[in-house]
Length: 360
Image 1 (cartoon, rainbow, N blue to C red):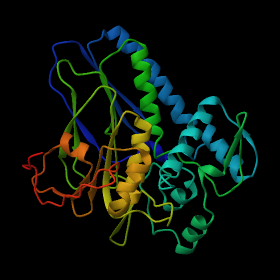
Image 2: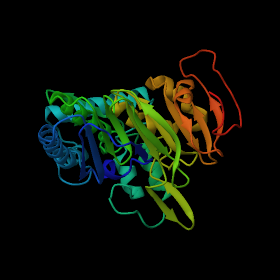
Image 3: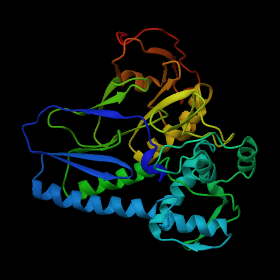
Image 4: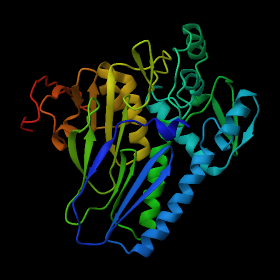
């Protein structure tokens, strides 16, 4: 299941020992380890809440599986057959979010390209092997132009006007799930905690007297490229191409596909987004990876994202001014290539070569 395994760049949680009660839980779901750290709450309360989260995650794992016969798999079968299909309220909300994110990203985030994902081998939990798909097949799938906008939903019944649509929610479903889990924790009176699903983070409250601190993993080697303090209610999501990829004849192909061409992106190795909405941050990181150095500013503006960090294949950094002010760079070799404000008509275009010692 792609959304369980592909979301890429790991952010390392950095925390110190706390005087108040701190409870840690590890769940294995969505094809990754989900770590929950809850602070300043009784074990009884935290145990009950985490049990409910575990049940909810398992249900979503089954329902949203893109290539097994859960609810999403059944919907994909109906679409391929040109048949209407009844879905529940949760799936309607998921489809609505997916359609909205595709729209505001101008199609750079497209959960309807499941057939392309499958052809590249990224629909499986196993590492994809073999050569890339035939160029003619890729062209054919791209020409069919599958889109979330092809779906019509009427009173919970879905019908697609395009049989080429195959849904795969790998680009944002983890964000949807963590947003839900964070809300559940707060509804149980848990005011402070952090949820970490393979490096994607949702924060609740604070860690005692300080903010929760996260380290953004360096995409080219072990360690962190920067650290950042996360305010209550924030989420940090990263999409990268170093965990999930295909290799053939010495060439590496990223799992992040450009819906416009059907081919993996190769210009951006990681994209990080901070936002209050984890699902949007999740989708935004994918869209920004596709947009690349030339299109990231416009995409950030279209999606309403003002806290963005991109790392290109040469290690160059692209970021918004707000993100620059928040980050503490850890790698002295990192070079800031571009700083732009997506919401300013007159961009601040700073091209410098300073490393971690730069004064912000």
